[in-house]
Length: 53
View (tube, rainbow, N blue to C red):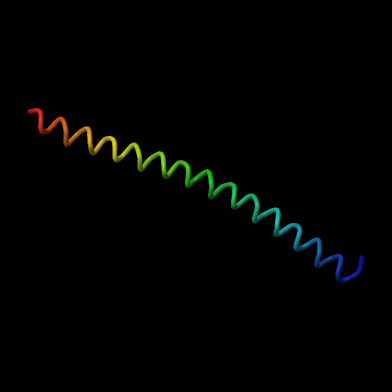
């Protein structure tokens, strides 16, 4: 295996790692969006219920 092949292997490994990181980030973003929506719903619900009392 010459130097260029070693470099190519390193790049491929790094690319795979990057792909996994991107997937994790997208999953975390989905969770964050869900939590934000849930939080907004709770805020709206609690302010509405305070007004009813």
